[in-house]
Image (cartoon, rainbow, N blue to C red; front, top):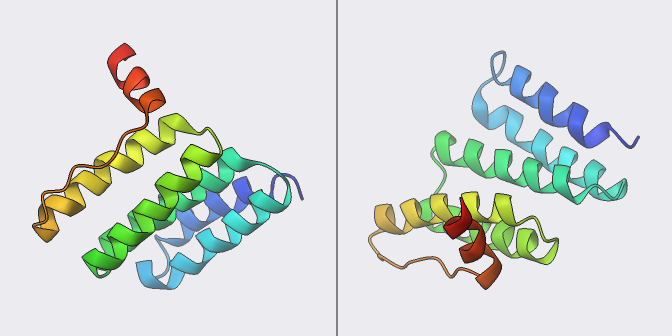
Length: 118
């Protein structure tokens, strides 16, 4: 049970080769739920990240993607998963450019420290 989030994450990536991308999207939500049930916020964030990326490549509505990324960034920040948060912010920046808003993502001071030190 404690490894369910990881197993679902990996198996979903394999499933993408067998089924259309849209059909596999729900499995990342299951991976997120399983990871949260076992208390593994890192795998929960990874499943959110993979789900959002899959939605992006599946051609989801860009405004909806912006919302999903905002929620994932907030979750990452709450759980102190700052490396994932910075990665999510970079994709959110791309979404803003594609939508045409030109808004820069808000960076926490911890994320700025990570960006500067790397």
